Image 1 (cartoon, rainbow, N blue to C red):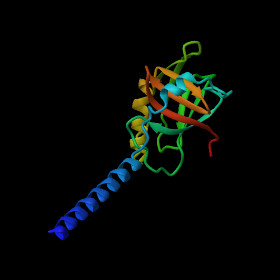
Image 2 (image 1 turned 90 degrees about the vertical axis):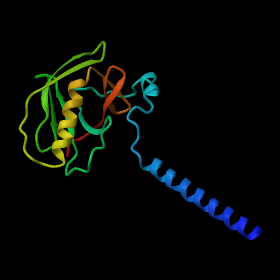
Image 3 (image 1 turned 60 degrees about the vertical axis):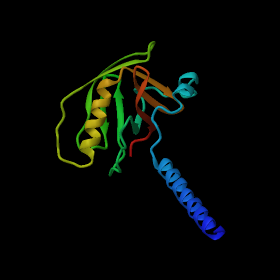
Image 4 (image 1 turned 180 degrees about the vertical axis):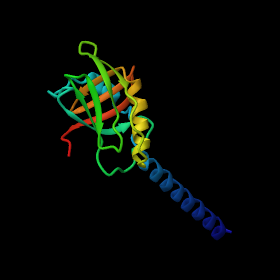
Length: 164
């Protein structure tokens, strides 16, 4: 009788161990929530001298979207003279006009229609990026990163980089 109880207890113990490992593995593979550490960003002062217009911004994250592996990195550039925002690194170009108010860190982007060459998976990235850019109404630059928001919701995260 003791051997049967021991065998059952051992099976339950092994089952719980395997179950715990699988749950841990699933949680560790999930992408980070783009909103993590938002309060710490809002409370920290920028140690960076970066400017929205004088920097090429490498796309890192889009809210609720996993960016697939692409042939080239995706960059956004803001042209101060023409007030144009353009992307590079994608099959088609995402571009449009923008308005900013430095005092309020407000940023409004209106995109232009673009060509729709069939280039998977770039097309999905372009469409998702375009939808997110249209919703942006505020930006923040901190610690070499550009954060684009709709209200308090973080939509897009980019990092300063040199275009390759």
